[in-house]
Image (cartoon, rainbow, N blue to C red; front, top):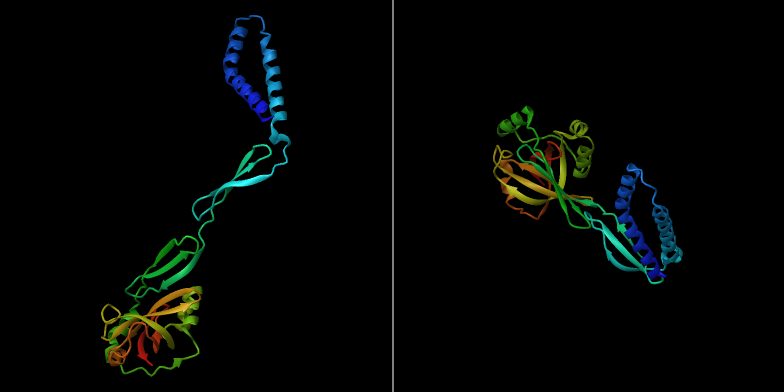
Length: 266
């Protein structure tokens, strides 16, 4: 049956290829007002017969397919996949396209920007490992902060109260939701923070009066968050007792979600 259907489709293909030539001949004869060609009628009759027989003898017309998977390619984040099936009853095949999945991103690391350094926000796809890195622009240093930093040498040790009820988790999430509102709530207030030391630096704009700046690391949910803690010169001896990897507790004045200044090791 399949062979008969294939032969009929072959005849149909021949007639389709011949049709433009026959149509041109018909136009020429019509312009010349010559008698109608009887074969035109038989051309269309044969075309209909070939098509009817091809459809009726094609197993896929009446087959209750029992498809089996013969080949497949899984879809990825950026490319479509496919599955090819074959029916042993009629020899028919079908192919299904699988839509590309798109990336499934999760937060990996967030380094908050400061007055002299850009921050960084890193996300990674859980399926293919693709990483998206977003640079967070450095903060504008306010005149108030500049004056405070330059005058800090001459000021006595702070006796400002420390709010121990607030954690860095609270500060981070507040700045993430609304930076302006968080500034009103937390900026220039002192808090107690516990986090791990990622690195220590004694240079840069954050160290205007000596001492050191510690890069701190903490995990919030699935995200590693980095921020800065600026220690004054009178804290140098205490800082010599800690190193990268240690978890410390300090008290400091919040200058935004990116860090703390005028810190004291506890």
